[in-house]
Each structure stands twice: as C-alpha cells, then as structure tokens.
Amino acid sequence: MPVPYFHLVFTLPHMLKGLIGAAPRRLYENLFAAASATLTEFAGSPRHLGGVPAFSLVLHTWKQDLGRHVHVHALVAGGALSDTGEWISPKKGFLFPVRALSKVFRGKFITGLDGLRRQGHLPDFLDLPAWQSLKHSLHAHDWVVYAKQPLGGPEAVLEYLGRYTHRVAISNERIIGITNDQVAFRVRADAEGKKRVRYLPGDAFIARFLLHVLPAGFKRIRHYGLLSPARKQVGLAAARSALAVPPPEAAIIESVATFMQRIRRLASMGCPRCGGALQVTASLLPQRGIMVRGPP
Image (cartoon, rainbow, N blue to C red; front, side, top):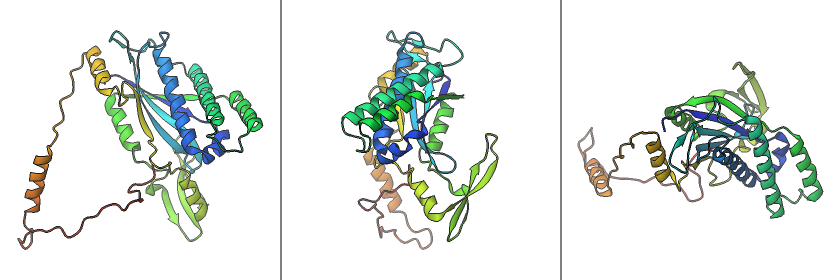
C-alpha cells in the first residue's frame, strides 16, 4: 500500500535467556502473540487509529557477538482500515506512544508466560516460587519498545523483508580467520559502525551459532491484520479502495500444460557442442529428514 511504514522493535529482557534456551518455541510464540496483540489493540483504539492495521513481524535472536538477543522487528503500515471502509492515517507525526506500548507489551507477554506455566508447557525448574520471583523481576524491569526511523513506502518494506528472509546469525564476510583453536570475526564496536575483531574457541563459536537455529518448521516472518493470510485478499482490496489506489495487475501464471510443453521443448534441444540429444542422467532430490536450507 502506498503509505509510510513505521519500524518498531519489541525486545525481551536478558533475564529470560535461560528460559528461552529451555523452551524456545514456546517463548518465541509468546513473543509473536504479545507483540501482535499489542499492535492490534493500539491500532483498534479510537484514541490512536480506530481500525484494522497491517503489519509484519520478523524474529531476530542474535546480536553482533552471536550472543542471545531475542526481539521482533515490526513493519507497520501508517494507518488502519475503519469499520466503515475509510483509511485512517496517524493523527500526529508518530504511530503510537512507545512508553504506553512498552507497558502493554510487557503485560501481555507476562500474562502469556503465566498461562504457559499453568498449562505445564514450561520447564519443571520454574516452580511457583521461582515463577513469582521471575514475575516480580519482569514487572520491575523497564521494557522498551524501540521506534526506529520510518522505512518509507512499500518498496523499502519489500527490500527489508528480502534481506532478512534467509539471513543467518553471521555472514561469511564477517568471519576473517579460522584456525584449529579459534575463530576470528568482526563485530560492530559502537553505534557509529566502527568494527573490532572478536576471537572465540571453535566449539564456543559453534555453540553460539546453534543458539539461533530455530525449532523445526518455525516461521520467523509473520503477517497480521490486513496482511494476514485469512483476510489479505479482501482486506487489501478494501484498503486500496479507501486510498483510491488501482488494484495491481494480475500476475501471469503459467499453466501446467504450458509449463510441460516448454520443458519438453527444452529437453528436446540438442547438445550445443555435438548436437546430440540431451538425456536426464540423474535427479537430485532432498533426502528425507535433511533440511535443504540454512538456519533461519
């Protein structure tokens, strides 16, 4: 949609690192649930927008030195669709007040965590006394929802999502040396982007990298509101109508028959060197149980 997009970051406090390590899927799911419910509640309030928002959440679990730093990036369209089909833009120069957003997010996450504990979905070491102590610490801690600079239009959002769809905790470019004993890699030293070199023993480096391999089948990019799979087709059409934006051109989808004809023609082509007919000699298929992708 041709509107500005806002960029918010919801971060979990470091005191939850041990619990995340023991039950990552439950904690990550609770993070998505708390962040999405918070944004939906604020967008639906007449004090702010009073409509259905459109936003995506992207999970990150790492920081520069590969330590655990769990947070979600929220890419939020600047406005919401009202019940009457009107597009409501933010009333002020910002989307939502971040201090109020932070408090509501904290409350929803802790409530969700308490529900998981009551249902027996958290580790046994979190008994009632341990939970009460953790709950007190979580409430006493200031949770900060960080508001970054707006991303601009939809093109910037697509570019951002494209960069992070298959991003892993560390890129090859940052690894500058490997010996039998240690791994050397670059980390950001300050907010200005200066770099320094960090050294870790090989086993410690691998252990840190494995912290960021998500549970099998876990989706780290999710869409909500008008962008959710259940309402995207109808919701986006209504939003475009409210914004007086023409619908996008229908994608050209190749039929199965056309695809097979094209493949047959390619298969019947001769070898560019000898002119002989090309034949299929082997098919490379993924073996069952092996993930054919890098860590999320």
